[in-house]
Image (cartoon, rainbow, N blue to C red; front, side, top):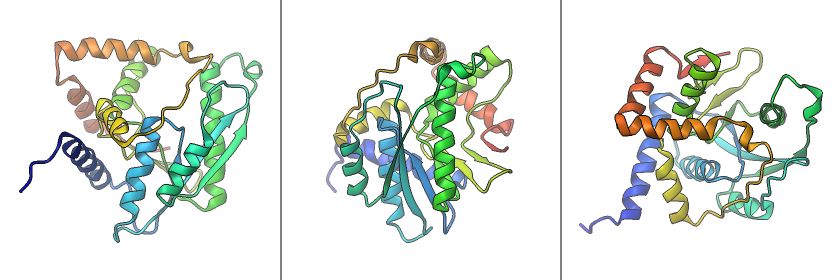
Length: 245
């Protein structure tokens, strides 16, 4: 038997974690119609590829579509032709919505919050128009751990972005199939697959504490390389990874 290459081993690891996430947290059911939030970054491109490849397998039977939101007033440049080509390559219909928000309408909320809220509002509306019952986002293991720390430090409560979130007021469930993937692995996989990097020039990016939290967690992992798994186990034991809202 020929020895697997480094690329093949990484792909096998990514797919194995992806399958484990789908199975362990029951993220996909037979008959699902899933809308992917495609930002154009490495994580959402990886999510689209993995879900599209999984869709080709007979069971469970599900459909996948994708949506890309463009903000008129945010200089976040994306090559929509590339995104269309990428989605088409995997037989995934892509919807592109252009919208905007006015940061001056609510001084209590940061522009980052308002931008994210408007993006999600458009995604949720489209999902219901298309008859989708699930929305998939490309957040990975590191995103979930970093969010947990941010919520504890800045919000004063132990919570995170759930792996599976079922909404009670609308017929939608939010899922994060990349929840077990490590960001560094996705980054290398994106390079291996030749994903085209998008230009990110958000004027409000420095308003977020996420980059500082990432640096803080890097220091924590130097003290304890198993820290991420300790936090994850705590989230699981407290029932924070699967929630209803």
